[in-house]
Length: 336
Ligand SMILES: [Zn+2]
Image (cartoon, protein in one colour):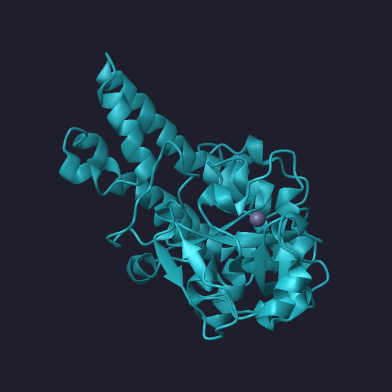
């Protein structure tokens, strides 16, 4: 299953074995199975992370209170939560523009649905859906429905039920509650949240013995089952992503009390929390938003290691480098 083995400078730290789905699209060993693999990191996810990185810290007074994100209707400004004195976070304004831009960029895939040389550039999930739709007894109708579903995702589900939900006091607000300042930056955020380098081991491995045998700090070795993502009703494990244990990874320890690993996947990292894992249409969770703001303060696509053991660079890389150089963040009509 594994197709890339990564080492760290510290020879005592075990290697990180990556599955083909965690590699860059341009890597000759990249492979993604839309049927069996977990949801891919969509291009828009990379872009939205970059948008929030470029938008910078979010002010507390920009977070939402009782707003119901399911009420969001892109065509009805009365349902839009950032109005009057409440200013929309700049990162979100960028993200909305990116969503609209993707609708335009993806037009060619619907227009050339029978041309595999075009479809090969489409996001894996969309390409798979289009291949099914073109075989439908009524392909035009099937393609139209597919397109409507995809556009609804970009126009409505991402800005409304997803991003407006995590930009609430009860969501991202819970991570910055104890941080000082009206717009906590990377330094402040990392006083109450941390990205910790850890070796995650399986049930059959005793973390203390493992640490002793390898001369590692015992605090940096943990069973995967000790982390919050395995303590849910329908847990996702690293092995579901094809990541073999032991694995040196970054684990987010959050002010809200949870510990979730960041899983190398789709040329980036994806958070293992249930909010992200249980609904593939969600492109960001509050932890990934926090990671974006932290990266913004570092001016880097690599997350810093707050403490713990040395992990491979790939386990800290939050965004695809290729998308980072090509994506431009723009906001239309954003009040300065
Ligand atoms: Zn998360």
